[in-house]
Length: 209
Image (tube, rainbow, N blue to C red; front, side):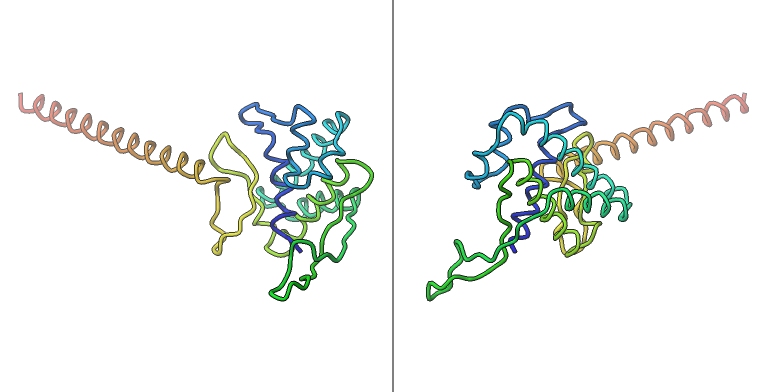
């Protein structure tokens, strides 16, 4: 099973919107088709009607990430199960693009495209990919970026479960912001100490007089 490939469907869709920044890239049917990546046969099925449907699925997938990020494992699983029930997958054994040294197919599980419409097909793959990731690595591996106001979704595959940001860019931005905040706090403490010393000196001088 191409776990990373399928689970990335969910991340791509959720991150097509940045609520904290008021941005939404899912505004045209071309944007919908772009989410399918190399799967152009499925992308071609997308129509204008899929825009609203995709946004609905996106909101539900984000709710899964929000529940996981908030530590509510049961809610995250329940929300994901509702998507799995509504958008069932069609697993097949496939050997496409995978050959051994003797050119024999390397058989593996593959999630076939749903025939009804683009939204159903995408949602089925996204939900199943996310479900495989959740059961393989744990609910706490689903996260939302801590670099405010980003809040993009990510899947933590680090060995020590330490990921907190969706990208290196956000990690750098957050670290710089934290460094500047520490410097401001140090400066404020220094100023406060200086003012206290000055007041103590003035009080001593007044007493001496």
